[in-house]
Figure 1 (cartoon, rainbow, N blue to C red):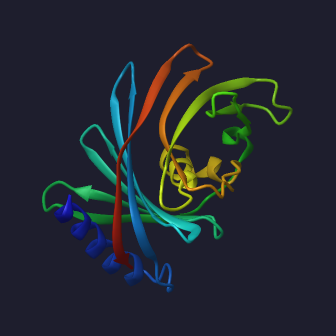
Figure 2 (figure 1 turned 60 degrees about the vertical axis):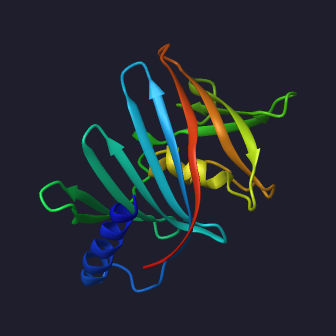
Length: 201
């Protein structure tokens, strides 16, 4: 994993800033990884965050044999995409794009605190919140800092991140989530690793 991160950082430094996409410095102090298991496949997702600044993050996704890296600027609504080149183990810059919140892919959310201390996160297809598309029951564990937002960044699509209120001030992180989709499919999301890092871009 160290070699993987090193390759990622080198490629992003060269490609991202070489393209004049962003001139600010990004500091990452946590790497948090989740595993998503459903009826069809297992997906590993890892997110690099700044625990003091939720305005940007880096998302690493392994889907089948392809590894993607997205540097997301939340406030600027922009993402920069990199894909692992299997021939040389480096990340190749693909493109930078504006994040559009087009209505066809926008969702609406409600969060409910349940009696047993878990949280129910409901995802709806319409603004009136009458057409339930997905429900999650989240279980937490304590952390040194408020890290709930890392789960949202790791699991949800970029377009949906802006629509979920993750302003939890408690020192918690999502440990596990049981997901039920409107089409009858289910999934389980499990916290795989919480790792302190000290990385700058």
